[in-house]
Length: 108
Image (cartoon, rainbow, N blue to C red; front, side, top):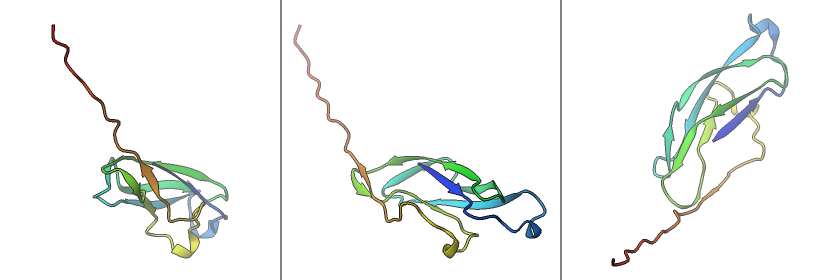
């Protein structure tokens, strides 16, 4: 899974002494549907300039077939009113079952 986080408007430079802002993130997934490999939470630097982007990637393995909700990216220190998702959710992912294979023995 990859999430692109983009700053939609300039951040007040007077409020931040550096040119980057630390963004905390947390990946939430239903443990019955997904196994998450790697770091589920952390922080990344995002420039204070409008249009700056970062990509947060995590490896997810589905544990069941069917239509399931994908893991979600949470930004705990950012007010929900300031977060916009495109396209808007909720989303579903179709996980196909494993391909069945057959094996047989031929007598010598």
